[in-house]
Length: 330
Ligand SMILES: *Cc1c(COP(=O)(O)O)cnc(C)c1O
Image (cartoon, rainbow, N blue to C red; front, side):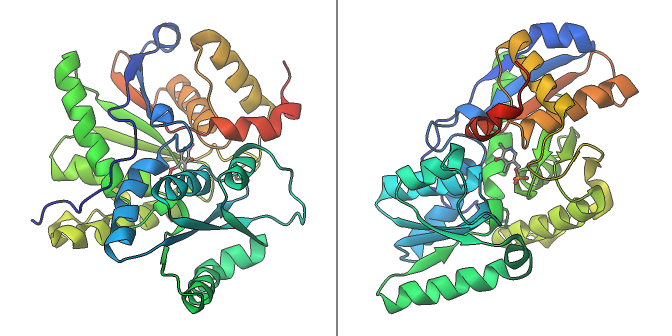
């Protein structure tokens, strides 16, 4: 097997692991949270771990511009804009919205503060031809003497997967220091790269952990196949085809998408509020809020063994709360 690709160090690592004492008592499990929401400030969240590898590849290819895409409130796009600015690169963000004048708030506001070149794209064009549009933009920039590197949605591709492969190494080190082992890891799934890295590490190091994803869009079948593909792509960097993971080996707990991607239900926002008051930990409405809400429901259904050690990955997203503040019942 070849060594991991190189990465540029940007994230504030290792991120802390903390026990949620009241929540553990309430659920009858030992629930810990890994604070990947504290991987930075401007680039806080899970995307920076993946971007460390994607951006190194961009620099190795001589790129001076990063092009990527996401929803109007994309945490990934905001992290890319921040990392690009820090490194003296240009960023161009393709943001999905059908609103011609979206509110200047949350992540989108930060994208603008950070000087990203923002292009809006309709939900329909985003779904059917975002890669084509990013390639057109790359050609446009080439005509102006720039070299662009395209990062796919969420940096969820082969190279980005190394972010969470190395996060698992970090978790193993923290287990040693803490003198305990996590039986289960729970993570929100939006584009799949985070879970792909975790399941690949689980296989690569023979960890036998239960790695559970809770999807916030699409469905379980979609992500089982998508994550299997991402793992295959990551394995190609290691020249290790035996690391393939079949879709049915990937555990996704479906049923918590609610009204749809980035749309909230009252019970989810009430849950985020109550959880914040119980643990002083603020979840985001798009990913971690739905994921934790789903986790609690699954605990009640008996999907997790009592008194097992669970590590919940807080993947960030705080800025996404501000644009939905009017929907909160405080
Ligand atoms: C993108 C994102 C996720 C999901 O990670 P994927 O690798 O895209 O599945 C989870 N939480 C937050 C806050 C995110 O921004």
